Image (cartoon, rainbow, N blue to C red; front, side, top):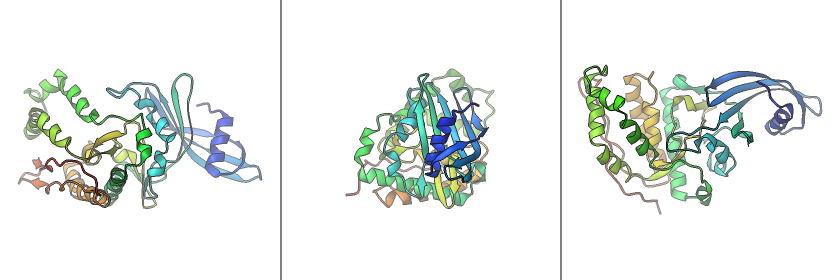
Length: 316
């Protein structure tokens, strides 16, 4: 990867708050795909007074593309970093610092971001995920209660109906609809029936969801985007963020990892749902918490009773 030295020197000057006059670099891919790449940039920076400073920084390059029903998500992180959203975070819950951001003539997004050295992915413990749920609840509750004026200036956010419309879109695929109901389906029978039941009651389920408080959601809130660093939570990849309903992000944290076994899902549910509601309730009135998870004799049969519809209201 070729990097403009002038850009790198500017980024490092922002990073160290010093006058950087030169720097070398090496790059290593952290993750990547056809539409974007994330690289770790490392090297030695030299200051005007002769100091040699090792550095690690993240370069995220995102090409223009369109997510279903969310056409400008490819540049959303750029727009959010250019806004005042960063002022809404706390020391305990935040995103990585952005040292420089640009969109070039070919409509590629470039973000130079803080490297987070912390625990992430399947290395996160139950206690760490519980803390993430608590801090997310506090963050969403504070914004919901205070409704800062800057939120109205965030024009590039996903819409509240994104989850519903995406579900209805993929449900319409015959390969999905027919497979779940076919004799060839390899899913356990109780899982198949659960999916069919959800499908048949989708209108009712979404009607109840839409009575919950509308909050600012990350919408990709799962273990690979969470970092636990020095007792704090740092959340990366904000390109799907937008308006959503209370609990959307916690559902992702509990279920959006195929390598998490059933016991861990149960643990995450029991830890994270109460923590999330506790955090939200510190700032705003929340609907009654979901009733406890009930397990039948066969632990593979999970039944979750969700809270009923409650009209959104803010604490006065």
